[in-house]
Image (cartoon, one colour):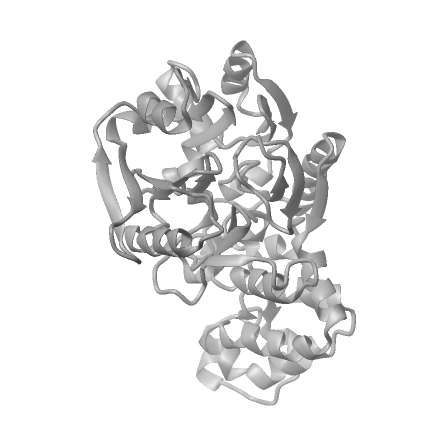
Length: 408
């Protein structure tokens, strides 16, 4: 199976990444908020850090594939798709892209090398790159000549969010912000047309659906239990629709979906920024959510297509232990008991771990307090540098899309 992910901790066999590219060099201070960044990463160092991340994964037996390579392969395998991909990308690029759609198409179609063209769609296109006789006298006076006709997509290195592996299927997501919605076009073309994926993947959610949902909110706790965060970027309406589609699939083993209602703020943008599983019975957690967390159990309803929802009134360790069949669950607090350390390291993704095997996780080296506590609890910690990557507000789990994990 091209997609096989039935846990958060089974030995990771194959993962999809995106190596940060020129899209990061298109960030400017005045556009940071709109493009969902708090600072401007230094690309050279960000790429070095990302290469270290990929190297750690390979050293531990993980096959690493890249989003840009998979998309380029789709275009090589089927040249007829090239034109439709470019036209769809432009059509979803906003009003300026529509205004200059013919010139954008001519520019992109002229890039013969498939990977170079794909990388160009990621990096964006500015007005001075177009051969255009069209003038906008007032706009040209007011806006700088470097303005983008096709925006860059700087969040792409967080490959966890555009689609999520669920069992042998995927949730191809409707992203919360228009800034990120074009990211899922790559996933659509890869999953529907790449010979490794086409015809073998069930879609539990589609990018055309109206409600936002993102992969950082989706955790595969076991082959029977899925956790989904109700967050700043994932709505309860989307979770209901996801649940209905999963329960209607007779090949899905998922019996229960746990919906975690977390505060809707940027610091906790996804469930995996405050909670990740690191071993059979261990989770990292940001202690700041414990008093504000509500969990709902979603199961199949009595009638076809219906669901049943129950609000759970118990502590998080008991809820997790009950659903995972464990006598005890240990919550390891990000930053320990120090509130300042906890808030600082959560902001730098101390709770956002990527498990490569039970009890073995990749983490940012900057979160030294949390990393020490993980080691004290018997967890093997694989540290990676993060001075630049962390400026995008995402950790190792955010930067990785598991495609295959071994069953537990």
